[in-house]
Image 1 (spheres, helix red, strand yellow):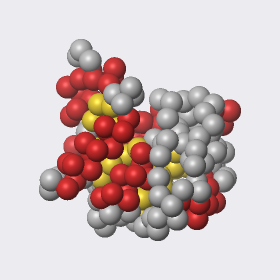
Image 2 (cartoon, helix red, strand yellow; image 1 turned 120 degrees about the vertical axis):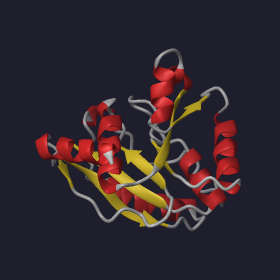
Image 3 (cartoon, rainbow, N blue to C red; image 1 turned 135 degrees about the horizontal axis):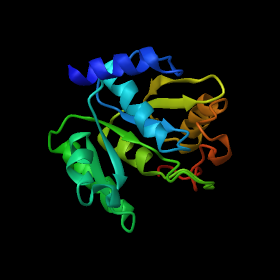
Image 4 (spheres, rainbow, N blue to C red; image 1 turned 45 degrees about the vertical axis):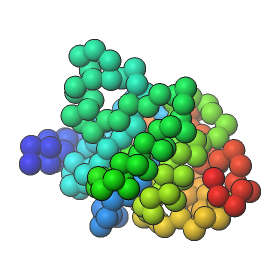
Length: 192
């Protein structure tokens, strides 16, 4: 209740406009992109809280050290060891298969820099758990943020990523110079 009130106040006072398709009716892997600034996190929290979406999110483990740890965990954070990203996918899949019900926010373009490819963990998690993918966005050009469509991945990586690329083609992020084109390292594989 408090989160929803805070998010309503945020959207009422913000120069950003919330433009969203309906929140997904079942837990999904929610992509937060383009991820070009730390402020993306604030906007994604405000979107999820306003729409009443229950979620967890992946963050680098250094965010969870010291006094920040309890805060980040209370906000739904799951620490990620970047030295072993495949273990993270397995842990999330095990949680879902073990009966935990939650949406998962992932920023597949990784750190806020000029990367060449998106990380494929979101795709593997969605395929292995059967969760759909919701396309969340931040677009400075229009000063809008929100949720786009929710899609079920087909396993045809190239076709699925083409759909995702089309959606994000006109989304700039907060710092457009750090935007990474939605492309996986190997989109020709039968599955990632």
